[in-house]
Length: 318
Image (tube, rainbow, N blue to C red; front, side, top):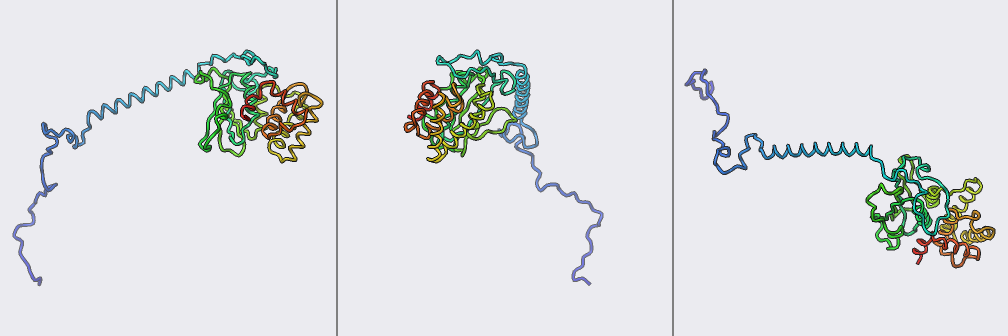
């Protein structure tokens, strides 16, 4: 028998209502006139001010979407005012240009007429590309060029003359449709010179010699004769590999070859200035071999300087 046993006092059919909460009190925050308006929305209601803010945001987003659609539609219909501008109608320098080819930028690059082409060059300020500066000046005589110089964060300091090596930017540079070519030079800590062009299918071009060949082609003055074109390529390689980057012995051999070739003609390829002259002269100036050069080479360097295309190089050498 259990130790304690009690008989039920009440029957088992009694039902007792249990409360859902311990205390039942009215919501004092929802009472009118309580002075606590900031707590009046604790029962799941949404503040009317928040609803108005959401409606305003939806309206702004709708207007932005409509504006974007309108701008996209205009971009497909608007043509640049210089669409029919040919290279031969551009203002020429008073001194003239030795390149008299009739090449058109659109025909050379195979793009839509009137579109601005962007050339972006990454160069190390410790090894400034003199030949590219000369070619930039020649391009400015033939096309409307939008030039700009920037400094990458990988470079701590750049001499002031390198910041202005492309000249002063035009006052109307914000209107890109007024230009045919964009030339952007970025001083950056790169092992070799790099160039990117606006054509999506084109790979980046590396090396000063290769970039110089590309820019010179935009002038339409490359030799048509295969023999002359091969000679030009050989002299470009001599200028970069031997004169600019070679040892003292290689530079001496290249200078002797230059002196011999210039003894037969005023320029390396004959009677006109070519890319070979530009690259070799810039490499010789960069190597500091101009003062000790033979007679024919000195005469040739003076002839290059008299054209006025190398003024930017001599400015950097001062």
